[in-house]
Image (cartoon, rainbow, N blue to C red; front, side):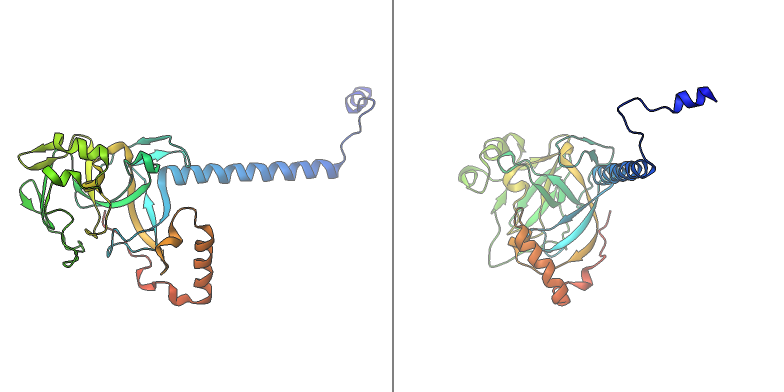
Length: 269
């Protein structure tokens, strides 16, 4: 009994915690642990499984529209820590004519994430005559391509040569390097890299203008559209938080702004 009294004694100058204080501390600790689990789950899901993205431009019309909200699968393609440059490519590789999300090789623009269709695989020979695309000597069937006859082709022929290399739409790096990858008038895709193009051929900033996409920069592939909202292109640009909030608010007021028929549209894998 005396031993128990000694163990129970609180040092002089300190008060023994009350039951209420202990319970409050437990609640705070449980809350902290709960949020840590939420953060860990977010990092795992966002970094290795799926991501939510919104389409800000019309480069993939009519397959993907401005304001389409898509779920992107990273499974097998890439794993990383969200909001950092830390990532690791995995075992899956893009297929020809598959829609892919990737980091564009545009360091001056912060390597933005793009969504395009994979046209050329490593080792492929690519040539374009007007709007027609030839891969390894065969005309590529592209029922998805959106062509505006009045606009004319982006290039009379691709890869460009001579004066066409002075086209200001080409990045300086690509304009100086592209000839190194041309063999007998065809662009040869290097090992470990891919050639990407948008569906809206006359309004797509793609590999024709800035070059190949390294395998390490592939993020994943789209799974399905979970929301599609009609709104100006500016509303989805980075930093336009006010416009985006206003767009979502309009949806509650006028549900007709939602493209209901596009919801849960899936993409081939």
